Every structure is written in structure tokens, then in C-alpha cells.
Image (cartoon, rainbow, N blue to C red; front, side, top):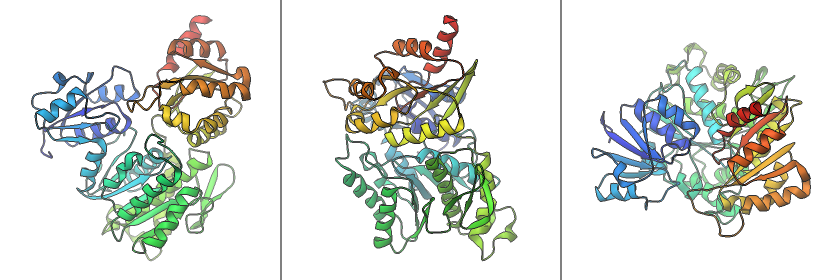
Length: 482
């Protein structure tokens, strides 16, 4: 399936990882098209700009007669008519994780795993490897956000590796960075211990002579680091964070600057301010260095080759660090969409209590003095039910909160009883009273937001549900009210 002009059809092509994969496959010379629901996602514009055709629906008749391979989002089951048709025609069929596993065997491969921070860490590492190596480092990356610049090579690869349904166990990896390990995906994992065992298996599966990097500030990631030290003496094991005991301990400097224990005389600045995001940026630096040093001739990719001496780590780190300041963020991660009057509209993918906590911390630090109106779309009924108390605690940190009905996941993991967002609403009424409203429809969310929003406020669409497009509609509704 690697020949030029091969037609690949992607089912669920608008998903964050799927759209990223579609753009990469097109860049490699494949013919790419696909199908998805009629909903408008942030990826619609990106796919349209790339000239990739997206059909509406999942009917068998949509599958082109000359299709050479089908890749489908793991959000969907193989019972979809179009996937049944592919099987009937004996067309090679891959789920998204299966295709990443297939790609991971084509070259040296590395991954970022963890409950939170995967996309950000992959995005920052991609930025560093492109800019600090002046475009010479021969790699490609696939993660949950589209990349503007597809240049690179195929000598090595960086993947965002998800623990859901143990998908990352099938990847062939030389190195992994683990950002965090918490309880999530309760429709699959029965407990935190079950999640931990999945990450331990990821460590077991790493290729001999490779590396493991973990965040020392996260309890779960540190526990996996300890497991690796006991069971994998053949791996290079590194950690980073404010509590790290090694060269990548982060120290707060003056103002918005930081230093590493490795380079105490060199301060650096970041575009992010929340502690967990600072960790993600430094983790990306450590991963970039590890990937570079894992190549047989790292000097090939560094501008001043004379700089690589016995002091290789501090030398390389000093070359990479300044590029952190120019990282501009990725789509859907505390992303400023637009400003209308004095109201600022943001979008954020945070959908787990720990991610919401980090995002709200980052937003308050980035926009001091602005009250926060959060419009939250819970994603998966099982997650919302399992973590109700945690959701209620972190969402109460909003100044005003609109809860939308739970997003209808393709996982069909809901129950026939109450919408968990309604139960969450009743919990939040007890803590923040009239500061929370429940919106059973998009129209209701629009009306409430337009009535509540005031000048010099932030309006934040948040969650893995599809509510990003509400921002422009709210701005329009406010203008019509005035």
C-alpha cells in the first residue's frame, strides 16, 4: 500500500488524529478521501484547504470502486455499512491504531503516552526538531492536531499513543515519554490499577536499548518510571519536572523564565504558564534530545557540528532551549479563536478533570483580570458518571458555567437513565448556585451565553464534545441584542 497514487479511504476522517493522518498520507503521495458525520468540526476547514474530499454519512455506496485500503477511526465499530462493504470487497482494513502500529514498524519509532498532555508534548517536540535542526532531522509526526508544515523525512517517527483499549501495546517503539497516568476511559478500564498495568505492559514492550522518559511531577508517571527501573535495566531512563532529581529538574526563574539543573546559567521562557504545561514543554525538549541522540550520527542535524563534544547533553539542550519561546500552540489547546469588542473567545479540548484544572489555571494566568464564562460539553457518559465529583470540583472554578448535554459518543457508552450532565448540574448548583446553567440544546447555550457575557470577559468552549463553532454564533447573537 506504499505506492504513489494508491487510494486510501478514511472513515471518521474529521477526528483529530485521523485528519492529521489524512494530511500526512496526502503529503506522501497517496490519493486520500473519506467520510464522516455532517457535523462541522475544526478539521473541516483544514481538510477542505488540502483539497481532500469528505463525504457525508457511512453508507456502503460511498466507498469508491478503486479503493486500495480503508482506515477507520476507533470511535466506530466494524458494523458500519461502509466497513462491511470494504470487508465484502476484501479491501485491506485498518483501525486508526492498527495503521499507526503498521507505520511504527516501517522505521525507528517513538511515542508520547499518558492520560493528559500527549498532543501538546508531541506538538512542541515536532516544533523543536524542525526548528532547532533547521529542517534537517528526517522524521514525521502523527498526533491529535493538524500540522502546518509537513516537511521532514521518514527515517524515524513520533506518534501520540493512546492507552484506550490498550491500543499502544501494538506499536513497535524504541522510546516513550509518559506525561501522566490517571484513571480515565472507564468504559474500558475497571480501575486505576488496570490503567497502571496497561502502562507497565507498554514499558515491557519497548525495544531493548531504547529509552523511557517520565514526568516526575506526576505520581502515576513516576510509579511507571520506578517499574521500568526495576524491570528494564537495558533502557536509558530519564525524568523531568520541578521535582526531578536529575539534569532536567525545572527551576523557576525571574518573571516568566525558567532554568534547568543541567544549564543553571541559561534561562529560557515559554508561551505557557500553568505548571503542567511547563512540564509538557520541558518533556518535549527531553524527548527531542533523546530522539536526536538515538540516531547513529546526530551531528548531521546540528548546525554547528563542532559543538558536539563530551558535554553533548548540555550543548544540545542549549541549542534547543531558545526555540521553546517561539512555539505558538496547537489547534484546540487553549486556542484564542477571535476577539469581538472586548470579549475574547477561546476553545479548549480539556475533557478530564485534571486537564480542565490545568486549562483554567493557564487561562487565568494568560488573561489576568478577565472573568471566565465556560461552556462545557461533557464527552462520554461513562467518564462523566465515573468522575462526577472531580468534574464538579474543577468546573466550579469558572465564574459562570453553562453545561451542555453530554456529547453523543460513537462509543454508545451511555445509559438509559438521566443525562450525567444533569446530575453534574445539580451538584454544581449546590456549590455555585446561579453561576451555573444547564443547556439542553445548542440554541439554549447560545441564548444563555449571549445574555450572560459582558465586555472584558472570556468565553471558552471546552470539552471533547463538538462545541467550538458556538463562539462565532454567540458573538453574532450578542451583536443582534445590542
